Every structure is written in structure tokens, then in C-alpha cells.
Length: 286
Image 1 (cartoon, rainbow, N blue to C red):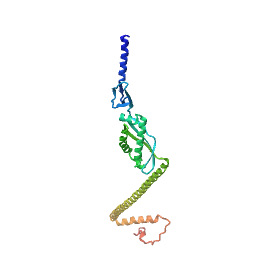
Image 2 (cartoon, rainbow, N blue to C red; image 1 turned 120 degrees about the vertical axis):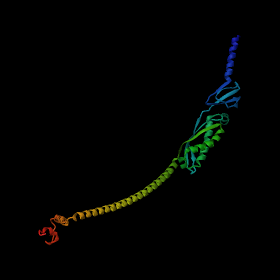
Image 3 (tube, rainbow, N blue to C red; image 1 turned 90 degrees about the vertical axis):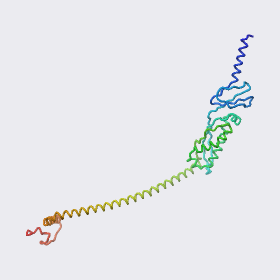
Image 4 (cartoon, one colour; image 1 turned 90 degrees about the horizontal axis):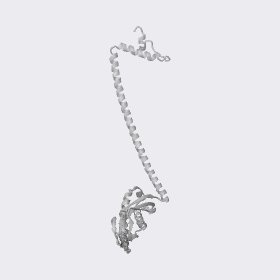
């Protein structure tokens, strides 16, 4: 056998041995090295690593963020009312060694465990809250409470809990009707109260407006009477000064005005003495 024929298989064998002695861990992976079925190391950084061929075996696990979409579940509130809750959780593998020893490195088993502790925590939190609180309160507070409570429990399975969210809270059909009726009655009570307050305010505004109207009219009449009084006094003063300069002419002018008024109505009858003062200016001797 030639030297070349010996070197080529030996080189190939060395290459295969070198290939079997290295493994690569991606950024999104976590790895565990086993020796004859026994876990010996799990804390690997992303990159190239070495192992003992044949004796060591490497298993990798997805370290990306995973989603547990929990099934709808019924929970009792503090009022002993059922609510139907849809929720989900975001998690990833934290301690891959613990993850492997507790749930066998199985994502499905991890979701089952996480789903169970989530339901227990939700049942506990919903049991101390009313329906009104669950609907009206900020859910971020409930989220923080659940995270604080569940994170230590999830870490026992090597799970790092990232987020928990409540997607929706529904009422069973048998509960919805009674709740909606109470809500409707409450809204109607508030509406009646608002209408009553509005009517009271309207009456107060109307009474104040009427009061202001009467005050304004009284002031206007008073000012009008004062103005008319001053005008009549001024007019009388002007007449007195004007006609005082020639009393005879003034008397004649007033008599003409009296004749005009008396003779405007042709159907009226006047019974007067011929020598009365009314006919004073009809007497040529005067």
C-alpha cells in the first residue's frame, strides 16, 4: 500500500474527528452538553465551542420569545359573578438546564405548566375584584401584580416570564343581562339627576332674568317719568315766557284752538249762551 493511500484516509479521519469535536450555538439558541446521557454543562455563549466526540452530545433549544395563548377561562369575581377571560403570556427560556430537568426541554410541557400557574394567579386576583373594578381600572396594575407573582414561580421551571396581558373580559350570557340592567338603571338615575339639576338651574336663571327685567323696566319708567317731567316743566316755562309777552294774543290763540277742537265733529251739539266767554272773539264789539 502506498503512502498516499494511507495519508488520505488518515486525513479524512482527522477532519471528521475535528468536525465532531466542535459545535456552534446561534444567537437565538441555548445549548446543553451531555456526557453519556448526563447533563454536564449548559451555560454557553453564542459562538463556536468544543466537545468530546462520541462521548458528548449537544442539544439546542429555542431561546427566542415564545407565546402562550391561553384558552378562555371562567373566573369568579368578589361578587361571586362569573367572567370569561382571554389572556396570553410572553416567555423565553431563562435557565436552560433547569428548563430541561423540570419540563424535559419540551415547549408544550412548559406551556402547560405556565398555563396552570397563570390560571391560579388570575383566579386569585379576580376573586378580590368586582366586575366594575375589572372593567374600569387600569389593567397595567393587574399586569404588574401578575408579573410580580408569577415570575418567581415560572423561574422554578427555567422560564423567564416577560409579559402577561388580558385580551378581553366577557360576561356569560346569564350574567350580562343583569349587569346591563343595573348599568342601565344607574345611567337612568344619573340622567334624571342631571335633568333635575338642569331644571333647577333653568328656574333660577329664569327667575333672575325676570327680576332683572322688572328692575330694568322700573328704572326705565322712573327715568322716563323724570325726563317727561323735566320736559313738561321746560315746555310750560317756554310757553309762559313766550305768551307772557302778549297775553291778549295768547288768549286769542287758545280760543282758536278751542274752536278747532269744538267744530271738528259736525254731529255734536253745543248749548251755549251767545254772550259766553266761548264766543268772546265772535262779538265784533270786543
